[in-house]
Image (cartoon, rainbow, N blue to C red; front, side, top):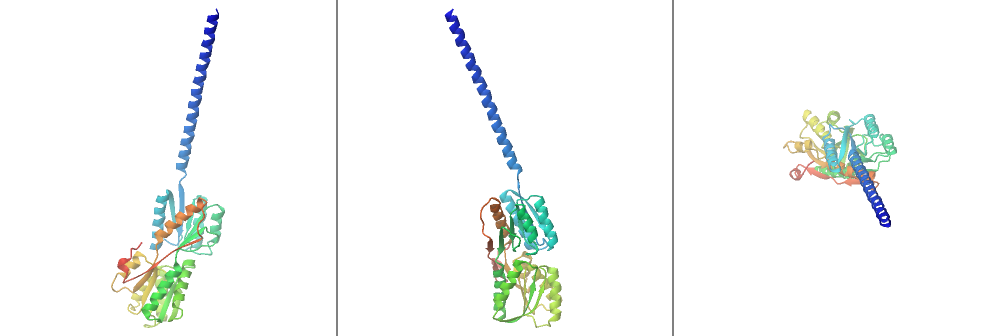
Amino acid sequence: MKNNSKKFMVFVLMLILALMTACSGVSKSSSDGSSNSGSNDSSESKEDEKLTIALSVGTLANPFFVAMGKGAEEAGKELGAEVIVESAEYDLAKQTSQIENFITQKVDVILLNAVDTKGIAAAVLQAKEAGIPVIAVDVNADGGVDATVTSDNYQAGQLAGEYVIEQLGGKGNIAIIDGPPVSAVADRIKGFEDAIKGSDIKVVAKQNGEGSREKALTVMEGILQANPSGTINAVFAINDPEAIGVEIAQEQAGRKDEFFIVGVDGAPEATEAMAKEDSSIYATSAQSPSEMVKMAAEIGMKVKNGEEVEDLIKVPVELVTQDTLDSYKGW
């Protein structure tokens, strides 16, 4: 009887242990399943959270900004981000609206080529209040941007001024075709005017070509009408589209051999014009818009990730002349 009782107790204990082991296995399996499911959900969530970089430029009618847009697309591929590129057509109200739309779309970084350095301040402030990093590209922007990436525009104007002095032997009459009210233009003009200061070069005309070929053509026509043949020796244009507009006005007025033109950008259309034997565009201070915007995108991501960045990053420029054109890599 005692043996039977012992056997029964052993059987009961074994049964309890077996049940406990089975429950433990089920619990572990269930726990592992939950963990894996959570991991997958997290992974899917991360994949769904794609970054968005937004770029607003002065106008996509300018090849410089087209190159900038391509640079942004390339940066997007490298960073795994979607890219939005908008053209403001040098319209402050339009660019302000674009930034407001970027804020509504909750983009991760805004790259801004301001059409008006001071006028865009309120829109920049809105973006900052929404927690979106804003990186100014090519020109500065008020309102508290996180950083500015720009060509050394003072150097661009300075190189152009030094070239004009060299070509004219330090004396002569010139015209300046100015541009939009942005820091890049102001810096180019200052660099140029500082370079010719102290020489016998006289500025006989200075008008706003608004950064476009068409407007520069129109204002140059007026300058040529006001200044008789033989009274202008050179023209400095703040970008290459303006330089081309000046050359067209020169051709139409029949004053092709009277003066030479210096621009800024190193744009394909300018270098193509310079390659022609009879071109009046002698030189251009070349920038690198694609590399500039790629750098801005990288800096924007650093700001987004809480890293410290420099306030101002200047990218050097180079003077390209008809004589050095063959060695210029271009955009």
